[in-house]
Length: 485
Ligand code: HEM
Image 1 (cartoon, protein in one colour):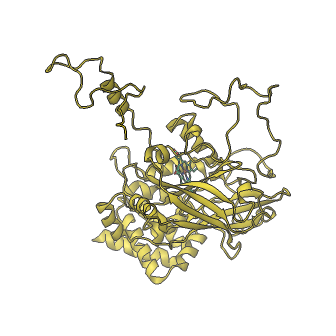
Image 2 (cartoon, protein in one colour):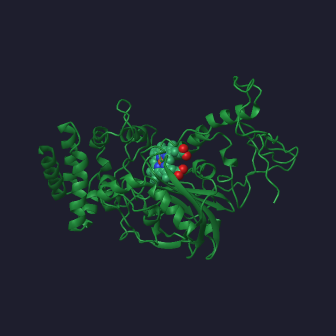
C-alpha cells in the first residue's frame, strides 16, 4: 500500500508535522508557516453553538418498516404499503444540561426521528414523555431558563426549578411523570418515544384525523433509581452514549414498535379533554393504540460531530398526508427549530449529508448564503415562474385545511368538559403501585426540600394536593420531615 501523504487543506504536501518553522533553530516562529497557521486557526473554530436545549445527545441510523395498513387515515407515501422500508436517523438526548453533561440524570429524553422519505424528509421531534410541562410556547424560554444554569450562580438551582413549577399548575402532570420511575431511563434503548403533540393525518379522500404517535421499546422499559443514576453518572457520564454505541457495534439492533392513536377530526371539538393541549394524554380506553410499523437502529454514525452535532430536526418538516394540529406548543415549535438551525449551523444546513433528503432531491430556487454547495445544474434559473422548465408547485396542500372561527388576540386555550390542570396528574398517581408512589414521593421531596422559600414549597404542595389528596399529604409530610432534619 502506498504511504498516504499529509496535506494542507488545499491539498499541498506537508513537509514537517512535528516542528514549526522558526527563524533559526532557537528563534521565533515564521508567519509564512502556512501549515501551523491553518492548524491553529482551524482548531479555534472547531466548536459551534450547542443546542440551546437537548445539547447532549447520541444518534444512529436505521430503517422504519410498515407492518400494518394505515392508508385509511393517511396518504403519506412512506406509510402506504405494508413491508415498505424508509431509512431513518434518530437522535436521542437529555434536555437541560450542556454538551458535557452526564447522561444518567432525571430529565426528559429527546426522541427525534428523521424519516428520509421519497417525498422529502419527515421529522418527528418527540420526547420519551407523552406530555409536557407547559401548553403555550410563550412560556418556553422562561421554563428553560428556570431549569438550566442560573445566570448568577452558574448552576442548576432547585429554587428556580420549583419556583417556575409553583407558577405553572399545568406542569403537575409532567412533574409527576418525571419524578416517577420512568424519570431516569437506564439507557436510550430502554425507553419509549412519543410524538407527544397531536398531529394531523389526511387520507387520499381528503378526510382528516388527529393522531398521537407512540414508539414502544422492544427492549422493555428499564429505569434507574436516583441512587443508581448518581453512581453511574459519576463513573461513566457518557453511559447512554456508551450503551447505544456498543450495542450497535455488537450487532444488537434496538427497535421500537410504532403505534398511533387516531381521532376522527370531527370528534375533536367535543372530546372531554382539549386534544391540542400538550399537558394531557388521550386515555387508551378512549382511543386505543393501533400498530403502524417497526423502527430499527443498526448503524452508528461515522463521525459524531458531522452527523449528530450537525443533525437538524424541524417539526415543520412534513410530507404529504401529515400536518400540524392547532396545538399552540407545536405551532411555536414550527418556527423555533429551523430558526435555531440557521443560527447554529447556517442557512445551508439542509445541504449537510445527515440533513439532506436521501430518497429524493431538494429542487427549489433557494440559492447562495454561507457555505452554499448546491450548484443546481448549469444555468438553472433562480426565479419562478420561468420559461425554462424549472420546478413548479403542485397545487396540492400536504394536509387538509382546518376550520377556524373567532377573534384575533391573546386567548387561553379552550377548556373542554374534563379539562383542568390536575385530573390527569391524579390519574397517573392513582395508577402507580404502592412502591412506585413511595419512590415518587421521595424523589419529589428530595428536590422540593432544597427550596429556600416556604411560599414556593407551599404552592407546589397545593398542586400535588389538587391532583390527589393522598398524594399532596404524603409529599407534604416527606418535605416537612426533610426540612426539619
Ligand atoms: C414551544 C416549545 C418548544 C420550543 C420553542 C423548543 C425549542 C427547541 C430548540 C430551539 C431546540 C434546539 C434545536 C437545534 O438547535 O437543533 C430544541 C431541541 C429539541 N426539542 Fe424542543 N422546543 C419546544 C418543545 C419541545 C417539545 C414539546 C418536545 C417533545 C415533544 C421537544 C423536543 C425536542 C428535541 C427532541 C430536541 C432535540 C432535537 C435534536 O436531537 O436535534 N421540544 N427545542
